Length: 369
Image 1 (tube, rainbow, N blue to C red):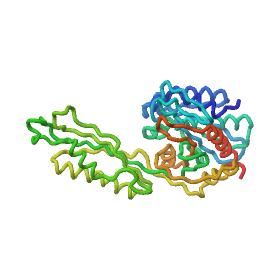
Image 2 (cartoon, rainbow, N blue to C red; image 1 turned 180 degrees about the horizontal axis):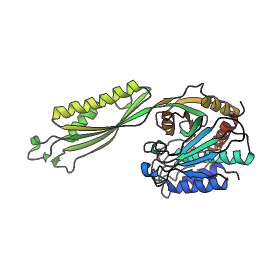
Image 3 (spheres, one colour; image 1 turned 60 degrees about the vertical axis):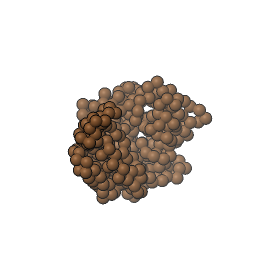
Image 4 (cartoon, rainbow, N blue to C red; image 1 turned 90 degrees about the horizontal axis):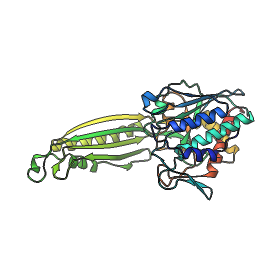
């Protein structure tokens, strides 16, 4: 049974699977994997991750001596796609405009499934494979963080990267999330404003001091959410601000985090407000040297297909961050989608088809050298 990457993507994209509601995609994949003669295991991570399903793990025995390779893609999308019907026109697949398409990361799943079907049908020489379809990647890489099945792969490829097929993401940043709460003092805005401490104004003064956007080639910072106040005529006594900082340089990351904290502490103190901070670090940076077998193999496979590969540093996190932190070397692979995380998201059919060929070549080339 041979699966077509385009057909698989169209089917997957039509299934609504926002983070924590990946079960319909999991059911679809388990059925397809059974048709290919493969047994899928659903791990026991759901109680910890909060998803309605666990991660899917598939182990495929090798037919020739070679490294054990991990292939991974995530089942969730950054937002709901309820009722979305993907549209194929002029060689490009897009959403119907009402929601995002979900090529991030259903294109990666489709490429893996199509490549698996060809490898099995052709009995192509290959080493052992471990395949992971994860949950909750988009909301913090929670699926693979709570993975309960042991993995034995020598190295891996996470199909969730930037750029066209042939792009190899060998570096991604650490991320720090800061949830800051400014507590002031409520008062009547018309009769006794001087008795209040305006939490929103205090937070705004702190935000105005921050560097945001791209700080340098390694570092970014963003004020993503502000909540505060109840009604117009009350001096607000509470403001909540969500900030994130990312960098591939640990020193620059911490310096920018401290700059954020310093601005909020100083403005809170000046206003007589209280400040509380929750700090979380969802993932840490990784860098894979270009001489690593994962990259050498990827470059060889790309050139076999007439693709000139390129290394890429991503500004986003991916499941590869977690795998690398756990000691399993992984790189990301570009999918060729455009405008991810928006209703304008699209992916060329040619990239889907080439991506499936690339995955297959990654597996077969690893046993020929």
